[in-house]
Amino acid sequence: MYPQSSRKYNRLPQKQKKRLSRRLLFYVISILALFLVFKIATFHISSAIPEIKSGIDGYCLDARGDSSALNATIDSWSCNGTDAQNWVATNNSLVHDKKSCLSIFNNGNAIGDKIVSSPCSGKPSQIWMAAVGGYENPSSADCLEIPNNQTNAQLILAHCTQLTQPSEAWMPATFSRNSTSGASLSCNGSEGQRVACVAAQQWVLWQSHSVKHANLLNTYSDGNGYEEWCADFVSYVYKQAGYPFMNGERSDWDEYYAPNIENQGFTYHSAANYTPQAGDVAYFDYNGGHVEIVAVGGSKPIFIYGDSGTIDKTTGNGDMAENTITNDGYSGQVLYYLSPN
Image 1 (cartoon, rainbow, N blue to C red):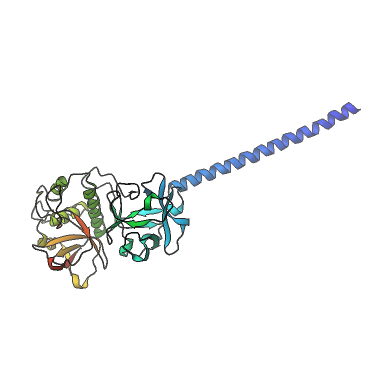
Image 2: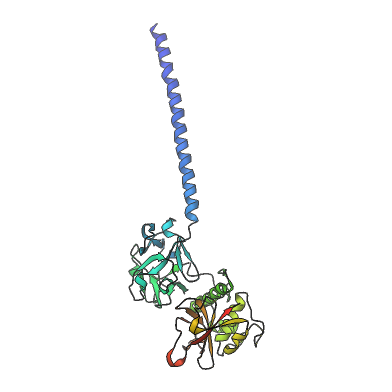
């Protein structure tokens, strides 16, 4: 009796153990499967976040705590693919999470001023243009920097003397420069926006020295490298943007005489009562006339132009320049703007 009872008693726990083991295995597999699905989904979400990498390996431009508050702190943080590092570089600004723009605190322009984020307004303190390997604020002529290479510290405005060093290097501020057209960046939008974008590309290309300035001058001037080339540059930029001039004095697309640019199908606006837009051409009454492209419009426009008063050491000709000057004292001032039709 006892042996039979013992055998019967021993069979019951074995079945229960098998059932428990199977249930436990099922739960473990289910949890692992959910974990893998979550990780894969997270990886795809993270990998889709556009980010701007700093020159310090493994660190990215970051809105601390993914804050959307006014004047939120901007620093560099370990690249992690979160929304705090969702930044898109446009032609003239750095936009966070489609909501706010990289800004200089209190619209400042002094060395050491703090970098924050604030609602995009197009103010000069929110304009950032690619310069060699980093970002320059044209209004202050200073650059975005990680202070003393100190990661996780709030970014500051600094002299543009370290653009080839990790503290001021940012990507995608740089891009492939395998051609003189700078075609590796896509320029979209209206005619004016395309023109401004191409002008910005050429500004970056010129500063990079990855193509000899003499070669660029020959490209801009249709093979006539040494001349007053401000109008050549305007002609070339419009051609590269897809809107070539039709009756230039050289090769149709190339108008090399600044006062004749207004005869290339533009709408005339007196500078006294017009707010310039991106892609407009500004005409200055310097000796012989001078033209510049409006890279950023508004009440304080930013210009990019060829044949400045500064001599380019590599060619002996006028250098390319970028500034916000509309009145240069006795030298002259902007008289009118020409907008594309």
